[in-house]
Image (cartoon, rainbow, N blue to C red; front, side, top):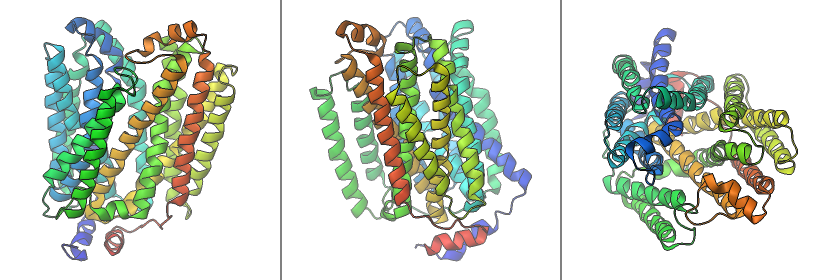
Amino acid sequence: MDQPAPQAARGHAHSALSHAEIRTIIIGIMLAMLLAALDQTIIATALPTIGRELGDLEHLPWVVTVYLLTSTAVTPLYGKFSDSHGRRVTMLIGIVIFIIGSIACAIAPNMLILILARGLQGLGGGGLIALAQTIVADLVPPKERGKYQVYFASVFMASSLLGPVLGGFFAEHLHWSVIFWINLPLGLIALFITFHTLKKLPRHDRPHKLDVLGALLMVAATVSLLLALSWGGLRYPWMSLPVIGLVAGSLVLWALFAMRMRVAPEPLIPPGVLHNPVVRMGVLSACFGMGTYIGLTIYLPVYFEAVRGLSASESGLALIPLMAGTVCGATLSGRSMAKVKHYKRLPLAGLLVAMLATGVLAAFARDLSITLVEVLLAVISIGLGTLLPVSTVSIQNAVAPHELGTATGTANFFRSLGGALIVAAFGAIVLSGSGLSGAASFETLGAAAAQSGIDLADVFSDVFVAAIVGFGLALAFLVAMEERPLRGGAVKAAEAAIAD
């Protein structure tokens, strides 16, 4: 350790904030989270309008892809920077970059400028969610922390439900640029609250040097992999030279990054964090659990429209149980963590129930009534929701206070990466099963399947089987994760973390 334990402990000792002060800080960081979460959903329904008005439909997918690339790649950088320079200044930097990116998007005169502006926006938004979770970890001891994760789950549910509706309304009745202009007042409010309230936040930062070479290697490796996953099966066949080249390049870059972590004086992700068995198992469990959930949110609308014959608006409504259930599960699990000793039992049961419900979908994908499908989706969502607070709090509980940002950023990074991997896997199943290949798109899914005489219900049965495997891996890693007692008192929490 660079500095003695008492210094870290004093940071928590000075964190005796009132309930009103904590609530004000929570509101501010929830607003910052909403900026990042809403921006990933509000743009979806406006994309066709954007493509028509800017006269470029060919490069339209890049408006989504470039945000995913930049926001995912910089998430660990925000965690490390906040551990070195403090949460407040890091959050302010993220919000400012996000606001500048949003303005650039709103005034973009052509598709190229819009894509570049979305990349800048992702550089700001990539750290907001992880930073918000880290700030709560600074404020609240682990034993009480689960209940606050519920607020974050509510933000994601609100963005999932409101985003597509607002995006479609703004694009149809106002102008597509409003989906970016709306970030300006929200961002300024978040900036004002963050600037004033986070001054009272306890500090655990230490003088560190950012491993620039390691950061560049990790960003390049992540971008290469996500490009391969985004293009594979749609823009290029999976076994084409561009996709294989990107995957191979990513593997080489990851190998170089691993070597850099061993020799760097202060690596971007300290080996002690990844070698921590609780962090490693918790990250993998959340990666597969949340990744599978993201995959289902992407492909269930396709199932509803292509197999069950629902319209686009009806499929959006049919997705609500899957979105809302996670908040219920997270609430139940988060509140129980402060009251029970064996806090893993509820998410273990929840994941098992989610697997069983997904199994029913896989077995009867064609025959179940829509009502029963909705009930099963709610069960799956509630079961998965019980995992979210437990995995996050367990990871934070296992590291020292000055490593909270790094650990939380790393966890969010791998959750995003897991989502990209599983979405790509589901896409490969759908594309290959329906007879689509190469540069095909999901808009031609039904026609291609009908022409080939393929029953899409069987294709989505395979998708649900893959989801069972994803939930099963999340369950297995959660079983393997050590169930350490959650620290309660603030000063004792810091001292115990240092002792770990």
